[in-house]
Image: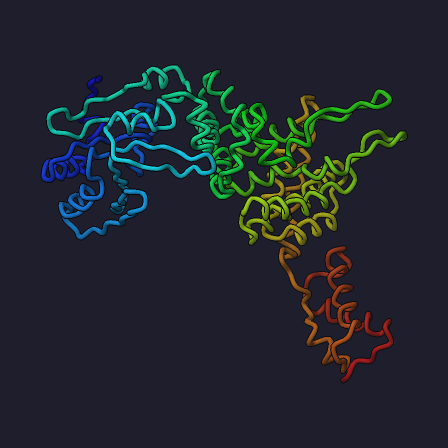
Length: 475
């Protein structure tokens, strides 16, 4: 048992209340897990605090709530033997010390009351088994039965007990190991890494929602590629995201190669991680090339092609989201749109940037045009410094052009200035295909710059189009 400075470790007044409550009901208790880990790593003050009581965890939570100056509600989860107490800025979870045993087809344990040592034994990693005493006679002492402090210092992810049993019992721990390695830039201990590979198929009993939650956290890390490399290395990625592993490898025919689209994708994800915290934009980067595997063809004249991979990829996004039980709402549509349009600004950056091309880009991308530009800038992974600089200089031109065109023409999310109802009234029409033809013609004329995005110009153009269709305006 190591002593640490209790003033630094448990300086928040909340810990005094917990200590008093534990005394009142006669139980020993400890703060454990992420709070201790992050305190020792100096990662800031966690807002989620886990407290383990040797005995009555729920009763301790209820006693703590009575000692708060304001009325505080206790949420009790009897099935799990836990209770939650929330303040305005801290979330406390209380649990009784326990031992666990598992069945082959479930990660939900059979739980029995246990000692603090039993509770530390069931923890996923040594760095999460560290506990600080909140008891008056040993306040601030660090209990470290598995040398977790040393693993923190050396940057190692290791299981407290046999890794095969730990991962087989609760396969989500395999994802958590990789997630912590990514977030903390730690190394997974070799025996533990091998155990993940051996037990990879056990991930199939884990709910898709929990897997996606870990994927979100890996994607939200500073360098997401760390996690995806480990997922690939252990074989988990092929089970979870086969669309990505299908991108791996370089094929050569008649002396012509293509780049490895899997490793390119990881570079793009890391690039975009430096530009945005938006997890859905990061998902767009991760999936932007998934259509390349099914569209890969070899043409003797031009070499390797991936025609239509953006369209195919956008369709694959829906299937992937559905399979993983991810939201099929605006978040999915956002990712679909960016995958579908992922090459558009790159094409623009290669050519002379015309107003009409920029108008179409703004119109099609709508409110997501800035996100699309960010994705395309991240997509430049060439190691040729001249090419790299040329692309990014051209993207600056495209971005400036977007600002200029949008200020002048206002085409983002625009609707033609003349409505369908007005066209019907002017030409005395009932609902018919002619109305759609005229509306589309007005839209195209504005996007091509033939007329301005103003009512009078659109009205005169509408009359001309009606005349071409043999329609007469009603005066």
